[in-house]
View (cartoon, rainbow, N blue to C red):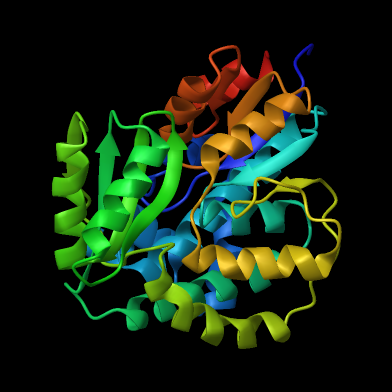
Length: 311
């Protein structure tokens, strides 16, 4: 294998009923990882993911532990099948927690309980229907920032929260302010603005109360130094110590995800291939738009896993 690998972990929106079923039929370790999480959570997570109701899986407090467990299951499978190790990890939003578990900073049990609590607190922070998120396409980052500032002058919270790739920025905040933000972005020349079907406006200041509550859960955990460097969402840097790492993970809840800068940082570190370690292929699409020279592959199915093993 001649490529220098980075592993990236997806966030909410990548979940789907039946995820990882193809690989689970071949590799028992997938279901074993889900059993470990189920025991920690007190309910059958695999049954929810495979044969539950879509609305139940899509509830934030369920989505988060389900995605984290799926990513960890794929990480462990990779470790069984390949001796190749990545030089760096990064996760998009919730995916940063998956990276922490895979790098050994937290145990799987700690991780799933923590992100379930994170999901509950995020849901509680904003009343249903009060918040919104929208993807702005075809407008540069600074123009989106200025459009949101303009929209916020009339009151309410709206800000860019995910810098996903050049020409794709997600905004979030209070529903009326986000609607004004959409109009302002369109007036500034955005090609499209798509309101996202989410129940929580992530990564904006409305999530600050959730982060303050989540800090109590952090304080009870035994974080250890990750075995691999993790490029963090809030600053696209690698924390020098555990205190900074924890602070960054916590403040990620109400600060933007700097995904474009994170992928660029990994490229600067010499990474030539990014492996998406989780359900779906959302990050593959973004990563290719950020740096066309990168090999990108998702290991969520047999074909993708085989391709990654041959990189």
